[in-house]
Length: 182
Image (tube, rainbow, N blue to C red):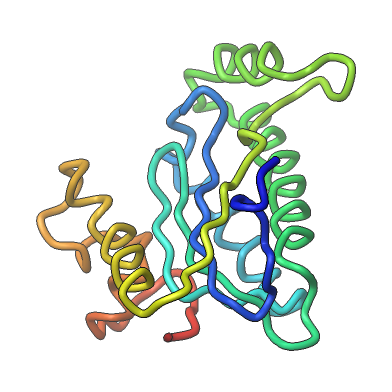
């Protein structure tokens, strides 16, 4: 893998995208989104993850992240996050009696896996971290994140979307995830 897609400097902010295998719209149900939010909160409290901006869409999430001094390395935090959420979302899908797409989703995640390494593939392998080396690049990626639900026709204004840090930056009271302002 190219050095371009690595966390080369742990003290910097990075833009990352985590995408569900085959772009399956898993995050249309609150119980699956809650697993994402709970896990990100755990990483903030216990691993030193700093979230500066985020959006959780139906089949992917974008984050601008860094790590606190003394925190774990970003690649390890994301590895653990993806492993934990993959296992727990799989269980939630299997145990959800209201999940009409259960058989199809589980089949797709199983067929996407490399049988020599695993039997289930929830997340795509790569996060493609982009170091945000200038204020202009940071603003560009933050605007991209916050406008994602608008571009997808979900809301008219970024701060209307519940699962986005745009609510924080606009001063909305109810938010689902704490952030570290940049």
